[in-house]
Image (cartoon, rainbow, N blue to C red; front, side):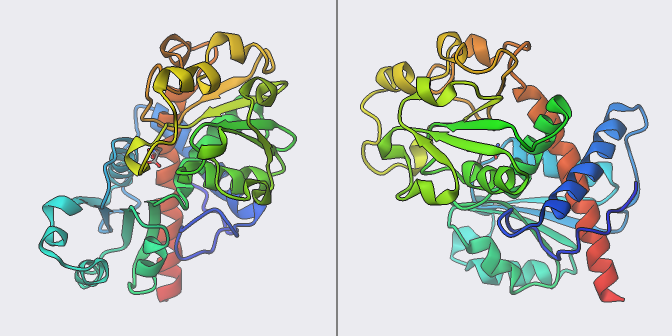
Length: 316
Ligand code: NCD
């Protein structure tokens, strides 16, 4: 694979602050991995002898599995650690856990943590490369990259597109990383949500805010739905699921207001019938939700590839 020279970061902690050429470099490399993954000869050994640890303090299906698959496709040794089954459950601190893993000479640590900023803190204490697999409601950079790859492959470009990000923006690291990425790459972003599910001063994020989904969807190229994150809610943020679906759930009728070729996206896991109509989610004419999952493996291969190469370069 052709290694991009534009991405020289040691860690991937977030999208905020990345330059357009850094994002493009990662997407270009990911594109090559999509093709490779579709071929019969998809097992490589470029990361042979390298160790990747997935350290997850929160549940995950897609992110953890695709990092595991990505590492294994590249020939790395991959270890999955579920915090509930580790010494964290015995009271070991995040930093002590990281230092312990660091002492084992690992190359990449992929971390998911419920607190915003925890992954950054940890990256300051270790010698390996750190990838943020989602920290609280802050960032989820590889999700934004895989979303961008999905859009770019379908639409040919990101600049000039109108993207509506809809639903529980308040609790969503996916929304934050996507807003940074899409703004950096010249797309226009709308957020569509009830007032209770928007962060204070959402307009400062460089987006147009809509509280009426029908207005927010008019003329958009991409409809990105977000899961209602019940587990992060303390108290009542929505009156009832039925009412939420009525006003903010994506169905064929609301989708008709978007461009005729608008794509539907969702990072998963989906609450069918809450934020998205079940048939629409499975409608391959409109929904690229499964493609997003496919892109996730390629993006994570690109990230592991680039970060291990940067680490080796810095050690010389
Ligand atoms: C997202 C996450 O964990 O932030 N899921 C994912 O990584 N695909 C979104 C969510 O949990 O709703």
